[in-house]
Length: 246
Length: 331
Ligand SMILES: Nc1ncnc2c1ncn2[C@@H]1O[C@H](COP(=O)(O)OP(=O)(O)OP(=O)(O)O)[C@@H](O)[C@H]1O
Ligand SMILES: [Mg+2]
Image 1 (cartoon, chains in turn purple, green):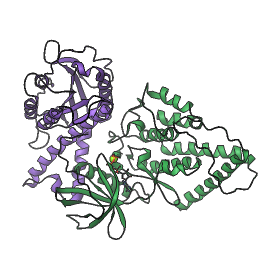
Image 2: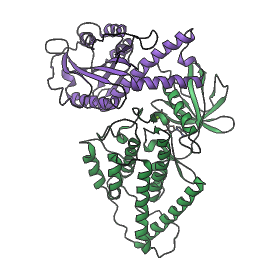
Image 3: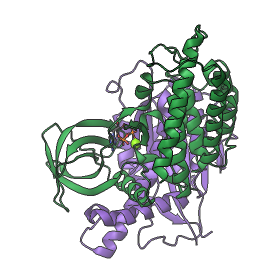
Image 4: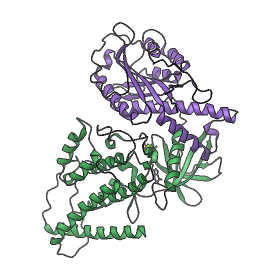
């Protein structure tokens, strides 16, 4: 049996974009392309939740049909994993709800089923979450203020790799940083199934004052591996799942 | 923490009544038992009896937990986890909220219980836990989020029970939920695949947590760091061999680890029985606990032999009691 592939961008940043296209618009574009955008906003030790202009974090994720979370650096590892898995489940759930509507008609969703029927649907969600292939493009803000947070970011990514590779499905990860030296983003690591080999990827830090989140996201959208076949996994819903035909 | 999904967080207060939309059963909230990442658990009164009700906006996680609870209640003749009663939707002012009802497990948390008891109890409770894990693993599941906060001691007679099946995962899949300190992935000592060894690692860490109530952060991680923590604590050091195997995934079943613990405790008592020449008296609360506040062992050797004798006798009594209790359970 062939398996589907979920695509996600994981954006890790500590501030607001101040350059180029509106990242919220790009996130909406991502949604059209079937790529979910998750955003993690990192707070500095002395920052309170409300203080920061991190509303953008939520807006991007909402627009990109992903999950967002604002955390202190020490919670990063758990958050990265939680956000990624939650977004996966959310996508699969959306897909299944669409399928249910298809079968049952009039906007019937899992929530409308009697409780004891929901269990069976959930088993399918779990099963797909376990076996689906996943491509995560990690996009890390390396503007000067992120400097002291990067070792933690690196550890969290390693941790994410441990979690996702405990699944049956295959994973592909790529790491990009922004702002890049010449382009909006810079490749730190090409697509790879495991992140435990990454060594020190975040060496070169950009000290410029710009945070071009929008342009960075836009470029990231084109970095997912192309696939020949685009057959459908479940009925009509292939917005987020693409078949790899393997 | 924030989330993009709109959570209509509903706080229920004592006296509130929730009614199921499907089964029409009614529950009166008595008090909150605890809140976590996935919802809030309340003590409530149903048809006369007290029950625990978990309310959450997250249909998926609620449904997933119900699946696990239903499965656990199918494991015959065993009480693994709180027994499941029903799942329903409550139509609140803020929309339909899924909830499920389960057995109310009354008891104290593991460490609360131990504060008032002698150290021997700890070993006995761990053996109980390992026995339950043996059954759970045999039925094809791994507990996942094993930690003291998810363990309650009910009774009498004292019996360890687990709560919060949010992490309970089918063997072979990726662990659904875990807590860093008890997670072998965090310590760099293995994957997060649901295997019996995953739970046994967590049991090892619960033993370490008992000696270091405040826990500790990862530094270099791996066996290197954990081994130091073990060796620096006199009480823990006695468990070194068992911990070594548990943390390295060398036990092929929970049963094996339980047998090792049992041997450890039996050996300890047989050596000391020779000094047991005094009749037991009511225990005094002065036996030194294995740990001090900062987690380092500071207790001095017990000065009085009398004390030791007492401890041994009490322990032997407990062991006999426990064996009788176990036999009673299996018959
Ligand atoms: N059946 C029960 N009987 C008695 N108390 C319970 C029961 N279930 C849960 N509790 C209490 O409620 C608390 C929260 O429950 P639970 O852990 O299931 O919630 P949660 O949202 O999954 O939390 P987290 O994921 O953060 O651990 C528990 O720590 C426990 O103290
Ligand atoms: Mg939980």
